[in-house]
Length: 205
Image (cartoon, one colour):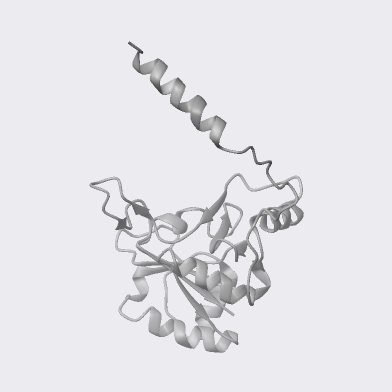
């Protein structure tokens, strides 16, 4: 009588004999092609994983609409530490806290980013940004302000870009954000906001 091990090995040998050997096509593209404009592809791919992308033609249009997105959050509960974005928020009369220390009541963190990757709908951020690391993960709602020139096709372009930007002085942390924080550890039920923001919005112009 055959042992269980022998039966399994025999089945594997038979299966191998019936499957024709097929060599991989090393010349085939590694990524699937991106159809249409990069901003539309980025929006499609990020929204597939529960993120939100808001596309605008001008700076003015973006910040006027941002007021509506932030409605309901008191100024003391909206934090931004990046001077360039702070100046734009003040220019359009959006009240916020500079947050030298992040309050426990924080509702929304506003940051910039390094690059946006259209292929995966990912946001590349780094510790070299003036806002530091906390606002990427601590507030329940994360809003990213970005320009279309920060869009790249694929991840390798983003890494090449950040290497070119910082040279030999790379940031100590480079992170990719793809959608809100999530887990399905408990009973395979998807929960958003488990280990970070429950909402992710990208405002792009």
